[in-house]
Length: 120
Image 1 (cartoon, rainbow, N blue to C red):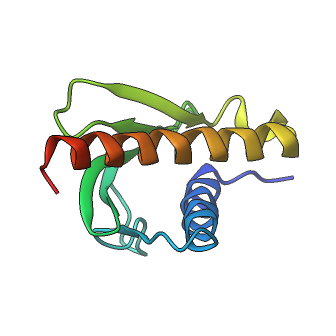
Image 2: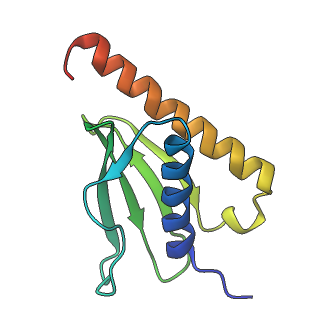
């Protein structure tokens, strides 16, 4: 069975958008995550939650399958690995859903923090 981590990363973003949509919150990205011209080892998109700019999701792809999807905070000081190509294929559905919910909670917390600071 062939495993395509780039497709899995796009699906993660789609599932995240669906999760927020069900809560009437809009998660948008700055541009399409992958295009047919995807040749770079590193590609990123900026996330917006209800039009508030948050951090970036960065997909780093290497030929040796050590690819990862990371989140970089708006300041660039915090970097969190969301998914990696090594552990993703063995991730159970319940773990995937928990990961999705935890990352969504992180984004909601970040949005609330910036709203509290009055930067919205």
